[in-house]
Image (cartoon, rainbow, N blue to C red; front, side, top):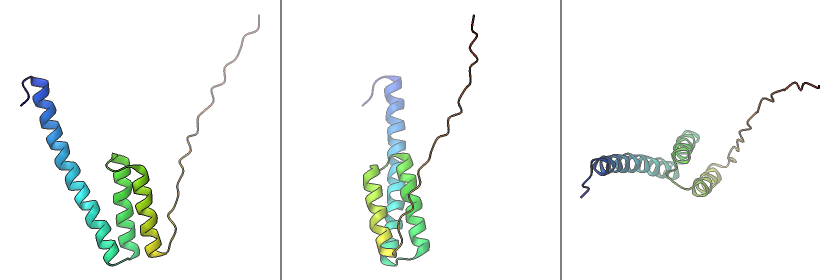
Length: 99
């Protein structure tokens, strides 16, 4: 058992996060199973949405999520949309003073 005040708080946070992640993972698995039982466009969108959230929250590894998306898209017959975000960096112009 934790002795210090910060260790007790850390334990509380860990237990709370464990429950949250467990709930999310069970919803994710249910969405995937529901899609596999009856592959429809709506089911695919729901499963893909959960997979994207899992990717954002780092619940599963990125490659595992990509692999599952690919497998699910083969079931429905549509390719997975690959979206690349490009950051546009504004260039700052600096005037140089020549002496």
